[in-house]
Length: 117
Image (cartoon, rainbow, N blue to C red):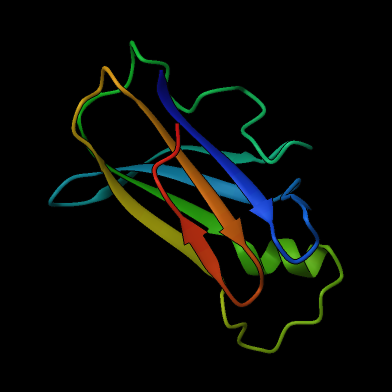
């Protein structure tokens, strides 16, 4: 239960180890940073869920994935400016008793996401 994310690098066919990610809560007035972290070897938050089910609240959230910096770190030559720099996903949690998994499949030129399980 709670909130989690997982990033897969579709260019290299591997987890996006080393990618920087930020999590925010959103209100009508502002985005508030909850935590910043770097993905582990499995492409996940090294501390486990971003929120456990006791801490997750209904509301709006934002995940920001530093895609261009990650691919440059992997040695990929990107144009300036890169096609994708940071991928921002805004999403809502309607029922905090459910698990919300937000996976990202990403390359320097595309990304896809969905609500996972």
